[in-house]
Length: 323
Image (cartoon, rainbow, N blue to C red; front, top):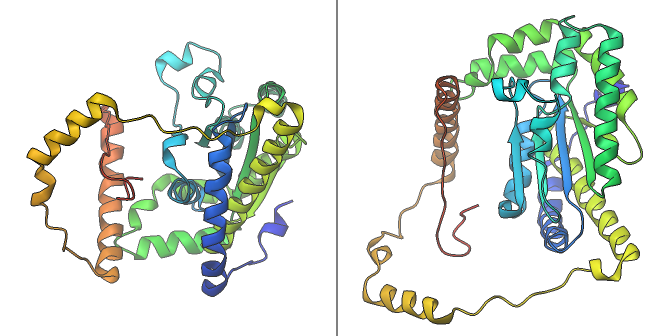
């Protein structure tokens, strides 16, 4: 099954730059229409390590409006979650109508890892997959649009990527002992993944196998598939009910409170003191970005181990790149 995703498909920088502006505009357009639609969009990312699951989810949040996107990643279940049905923690994170959810390491991760580690038998694995298929069927029967992307790398390509990360001081944090442990069990991992995909890929919730070696290729492929799926969902909703057609609404008037706030801002605005002429050239920016991403990731791991939660709030002017 995965041989077709190991042929080395690539997209040149020129081709990529030519496609991105229109694709981003179309994604934003369907996302705005989706806000009035009677269904949510659920996107699952699964696949081998270093194949671009997190990077692709982050890119979609960058290309679209993140205010209407929920992103969730999962590790081992908590004690509270272990006391409840296996799929409960995913069910509680499902998005409402009109919203998009991006799920990483969700309901496929644990069964596949347990089967690879031989902690469950093949019949037990199949039972888990049947439960997942029933769960997804319930979602789609309720109107949800479910897309599943398997991000794939061949074993040699994965090893090459790990080695490249380890040689780069700014990206070596991406490779852990578990990364190499999983790589050594690559054959068993692919065998379990093949079984999972064959048993759970349906017309209502299909799997898309994405070759993850070239970042530009996988980005365009996933974004295009998402755009087209939302378009089809919107068309079905319009055909089913005229009331489901997207409607433009007028923004609320500022009112007395808005007028008061404007008066206060005219009297005193600390933003007037900001130095708006600061600049950073692209090379320095990219180097600093990699370094700070590494620091942030390692700090997040420590915070997670210590049970410390973090909340980040962004406010500011429109078009100031809060998202």
